[in-house]
Image (tube, rainbow, N blue to C red):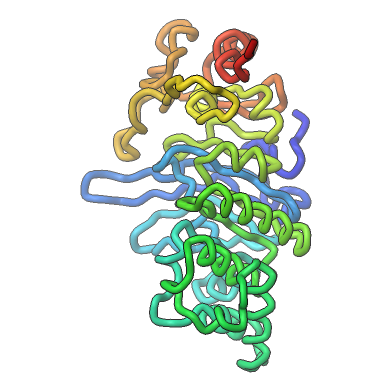
Length: 365
């Protein structure tokens, strides 16, 4: 199989750090024991990412996207979560690192833009104080004046107007877009080579969203960071990512280069995500085609293919395989990886005749 640029590595091929990848995740499992049973939030995730590249992780709420990012940062309490597998960052397995060492790495070698900046920022401290603390924590010997100068530089870099005044204001004095910019400044103040962005444009209007995405692209070019973009918005993925992981019920159901995902998607769940997207190239007020049903309980997962209770195409598979046998994540005709029992030639035919026509722009007289 030809590997896609930056990531398309089969889970069975990853042995320790993958080639020149800066981040390698191998067979990651994050399970949460509860009184009702074990929540299998992430169950066997593998991928690799190089510096200067962006991988998008997409899926519905509860698919395991944010749990994955928190596991990479080491934010799951060991008393409440069972985390296994391997997470290699620059040749070091993070799952074997001590809590103290992980704290040193967070902010210096890896950082995260959280989904809700108002909750992530401390309400009792000014924006500047919080950025200054990050600088002084990870740069030994830097005095407060130099740290403040660095904070001003970052606020200016991310487009905060009048940073000399804004640096002494509190999070509630910032708009949603400005708080998100402040979060980006805080995450990048120490030039970490790995940046995780968890829904960085949620609740922002489209103009601010475009500005935030442009900012992240510009900063990636300047610092050469590897970026994990977590989102449910396939439009953001198309604009930002080099490679994509489509997650469902804690597992990857499709994985590969972003061009393949949009040109030749292979998995019925990916088809459902694409057909449920709002379209700007259609004038009629047609209803969207949502993925039917609801995501499954991560405690009581369906037997066989986890998507089969919601899949429109189970009749394409002979016998009862979809309900009894879980498909493997295997190479496809397009060079991606997909998890589906439908034969690859038939999948291509279904996409071309059933799915693709619904994605085409309307023709107008």
